[in-house]
Picture (cartoon, rainbow, N blue to C red):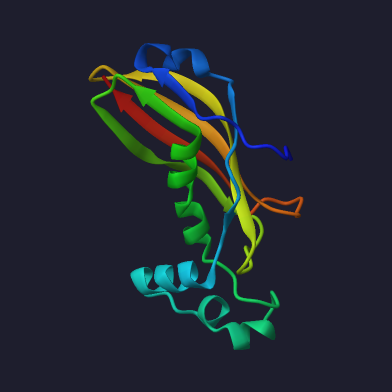
Length: 157
């Protein structure tokens, strides 16, 4: 795990193809708070006690409340924006995810960040580019990441 964050990679649309295999680095650390967890619980109607009841969660399997896996996964969006942007485009689309795994729980108060590598870039219909990136959301002080996923995005000029 690298200890330093990476400057944002900003490239023009015509240069995105050259990024296949590029390591985009790591984001800043972001603390996962109980307020974030509670807000996510309200938005998704998932109020399971392991997330939203700090007193009960102390005696639970993780010793503290944990973030919803999908909350941690959703942070790919701000993390991605922190690491990467494409100029000279009309539209940017989060196309989806492949091979998502929640490999470690994120306890309230933990700090997480994302590391991402561009796996491949291909052309798509409509003057677009399809980018496939492998990412891991790391938990500070832990060897095992919270989430590993392949993130898919498209850019149209």
